[in-house]
Length: 137
View 1 (cartoon, one colour):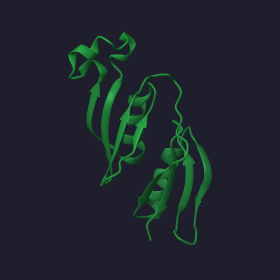
View 2 (cartoon, rainbow, N blue to C red):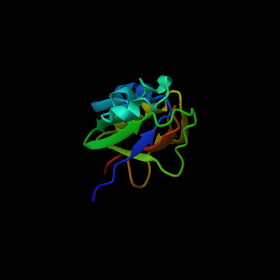
View 3 (spheres, helix red, strand yellow):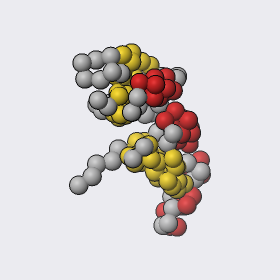
């Protein structure tokens, strides 16, 4: 078995992909817009304003795959009850990605030394996604 996070950005998926590419070096593997749906009979059922939105996307961050979508474009994103944990190889890299991810977001626990890591911190990014950044011991 394999678990992958699938995040719904309710209309801001393009913005999120650009942000994660800059902040943590995410690489786009694929993007499918609603207008590109392989089931042509379904395309006509989508509201016109959704046709250019992302139906499904896949990015990699390091060795991990994260799946994304604009979902139903309601404008209400709720990322509650979980955080993405990002392990990095050095204190300098932890500082860099923590600062990048927290831009426009909110720091819950500042990055600092803990009993289990030379750097650990928690934040919520500008999209409401929770992150824990740590240096792997």
